[in-house]
Length: 566
Ligand code: NA7
Image 1 (cartoon, protein in one colour):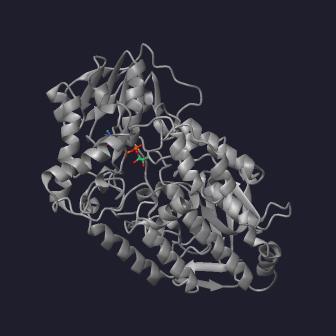
Image 2 (tube, helix red, strand yellow):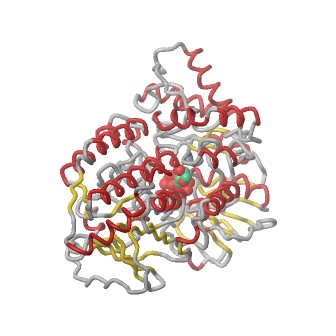
């Protein structure tokens, strides 16, 4: 259990800082901005060649956000939100990445970000109250705090199929797509995976490929996104009352102001009223359909009404009844991530597209140019894996995190992840996570959740600097109680019953824990605010002796007086 590696001594070359942030996506960039404005010396490490996180890596054709852009964006700067113009209702990956680059440049963030720098290991010195963070290029940096901003869906998952590495054609995981565009014209292509990503990439590849084989293990529900150019009248309206829209987003369950909060049961209305409610949401497009009623994701009978509606809509599109049967999901709608698409179901009416059921006939091997199931062999020139992620914990556990002479994160999470408010893990002082397990994160508009966590962490570090504290740790009891609450809330819904990545079910051997908090972002925010007001209830604080703590306190405090600027 213990790790006796000796702490790396403080380097004399000025690389030491107050806070190391790992990841330069939405979370890392906002952390850098806020903490820098508070006077902390911050260093951000990013494995990618550029900033952007998810939106840097997931550059596959069709990649698009399913939260409207006017809401899937930072709220911390009024100037930023007024000046930026989204061209589409739901921005595609290139536009979101341009936005993130704009933010990095506008707030002069790049100078504190080391790109192409993967963090491999981090060790906390329990006496000095400092983390030493080691990077793949062989550097180490000492910092008082270490903050994981490494993303919930960033550790890609490839299936364990024999022969996969021997495949002679080009193959891709959607989350590591090449920067140059890939031309599938004239090629026979196989796509494995029909989650949110597969559902976006499949129609795009079908437009180019000579033939496309879609290898589907689980049929999912998908709602047409109905994307289009940003309506200038809506943009004007939102921008004229942005503060109010953002407040509504922060206080509602989903983090999306445009989503209603349903108050009625699907079973308390007439069939005609129910049909109308679903139809309106179907026409509006996107993932709000299950919010038509307040019991769609908690009551199996109510759920069946929504599922039947979506299946009926799908079957109206698909011409071949056998294909329609294969595309019909068999689990309760919304218990796995609801997908949103542009032209997904019509793709299966194309002559150059074949749907292959790999639930019944799993892929047994991949050869030079073939994908072989027990039933048949499919000749392909290129393969695309849209097979998802080791969600929520994968990127955290990819870094060897631990305390000198104490536990590692991997050991602490051997039976599954547990974290106080999704922020800290008992046993790992001065280590924060942004949108970690136990926070609303992936069940919300994640930008709203990121801003909330970053604000909490930043205020907490500023308060510590004010008080001369150099060490914070989550109390084990508070963490246990919170994890219990997270699972109690989840168990009230149908989501806890599904074999989804929310529970780790997509990763063989991963302990099954329902990871995100289902209580909603508004409730979660209120709780976090209360915890902070209560002197950071559930966290313990202390100070290191002498000069070591003084150096942090004076460096941060020097600037903290100006923190009203944020
Ligand atoms: P998902 O939603 O995890 O989907 C992955 C897909 O890949 C899904 O259809 C899986 O089938 C399939 N899969 C995974 N492993 C295998 C193997 N071994 N063999 C065959 N098929 C497999 O990931 P996405 O990237 O689509 O979406 C992740 C999130 O990113 C999304 O929800 C948004 O929030 C953004 P399964 O369902 O496991 O049977």
